[in-house]
Length: 287
Image 1 (cartoon, rainbow, N blue to C red):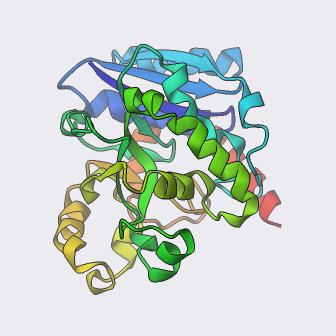
Image 2 (tube, rainbow, N blue to C red):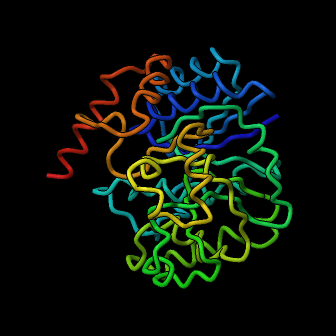
């Protein structure tokens, strides 16, 4: 069985519904168990998400978390990655005590192909496996964080060795770093993962976390050793991740991969109104 975890609040629930739909349609090599960490969902939302999971024979478990443990972590609700739930992924080892391994997925992505190969990624001697974040391979980012590994990785798709996290107290190490650095960090949880796990991480192929930036930048602006991978991933992504403040459900969005998202959004049955209502709130925040 393939185990997949996501984190969401009520506002992001429609996007999680799209993730479940894309998983259910494309992950066919094995049974799937999904876990949703949340900080309180409406009963109607839970029923709607469960209905989507049942439609595709995906097992789904809802796990409500106590945000008290995250109360000292810096947040800024005016930015798309600033909600306290962004840190909830750090709680997976304690929330899933009977699992040794899980695939973590952000809610702003779609799964395009089977995840069997991702699930089989060897992380026996590592805390995580993550793919490169192509936007932040510059010397400024690496120098800002003092990353020795030479590559900044994206936290939207993570193969997590939960047993390793427990044995090496990774959760508390990450939270202590974030609380200590406070607003010095830019991408709080992602920065922490890159710094604290600099020598405890494995790099995934680019195809497992394809983003709009794979298309926006000419190949020559990317690290030479990744160019062939990037070119291949543009044509054949396994996971398409809509990172950044502009999302495929945003008004007037022209992101690469938008139609791919729309396909799964429509199939999920969670179409248009609920997601657009979320966008209007974002516009008000921005103004």
